[in-house]
Image (cartoon, rainbow, N blue to C red; front, side):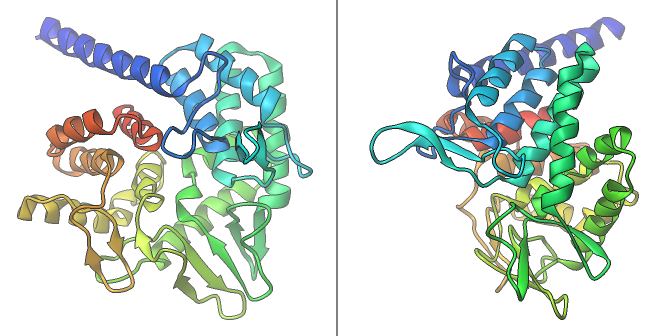
Length: 334
């Protein structure tokens, strides 16, 4: 029995390493730049954060070092000490930072990765960099409104006199927990608890799912749909963020998602993005990122992997999809 278990673990590790090797060959350039090939070959802070994390999970310090050096040399911090979110080619064929505004999830991931690297190597500069970024995230991205803390998606562009917008998939609860270990401040626990409350409040349509974006009225605190009205490519990360956390009653919080997955199994179809304004479900608009999240939920609740064949098929057809490949690899470690 033990030899059989060891063989299974060996095969699983071999598959994970093969996937990581393919991921690197597709998206990590020789100089460490992480390339989003279906998005004009740009590099963004999210992709840096993802690839640094996946390097660590695969014990690939050489690749971590390359990616780290590239972002230090190219994604310089902006005036607020946050990471410029977008680097790419302009209309004059010149490559440089295209937008100095930040993306909060990218900042969170990069700070988290630096803490993990510090814990692995005990090299103090990783800790110092993470703490500096954590300080600036607290100062510029966390808003206290009527006694509740909110994580803004970026320093600029989402906060007006009458409302502000939130991307709930940026609430990386497991990262907030890591920050608590290094930052003697109640902010992160409060942000986590307020974020959980927001997830409970911001469910839409009879599906009771979360949307990619929400808008909150500053006067009434009313939560509304905004932008694409969908449970789509952003919100699909929310179940991962919940499962990776130590949230109490996480299964209750995930009930709408497993109902969504079980409904697919009962009708033998795959659901894609859902319009949460009118409750309609697409049977076509999905990626292997969606399938990976569905499989993760199916494993957790049903001890099954009902979407494995669909993942293999769609991954083979769309393996240049950096975002989906990243989410797919995340779920292999969960």
